[in-house]
Image 1: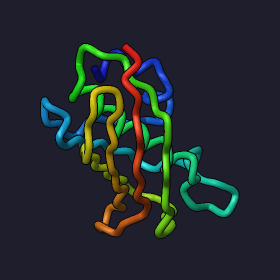
Image 2: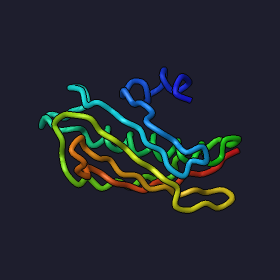
Image 3: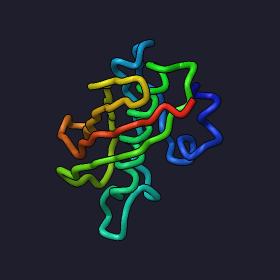
Image 4: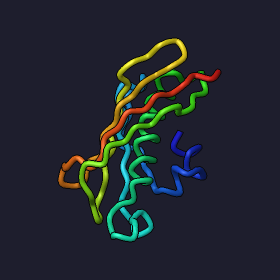
Length: 127
């Protein structure tokens, strides 16, 4: 999956896999904050945090339904604290599944373990 994701937005952001349960019950990804991840205030851009959450939760969903195609239908993000640099760790897990919908939750942590953002995502099984 990592090789297939490299030429996509995932690779452009600089995401990396840390760990994943085969059933998607828990996924962890990482990112080293670079200057292009920052906004004009010098803190990590909210769009980067949102993308990280969407990526981590999406991977959990894809692992839970490996023979299906899934798309994000809803993404809800809460920005808790700001960061200027360092490494980010993003964890995600599935909290509910039905035949056609999956809901996941995710959290973004800074290098010192501080919660930076958290969110939920709903994903639709389209095939």
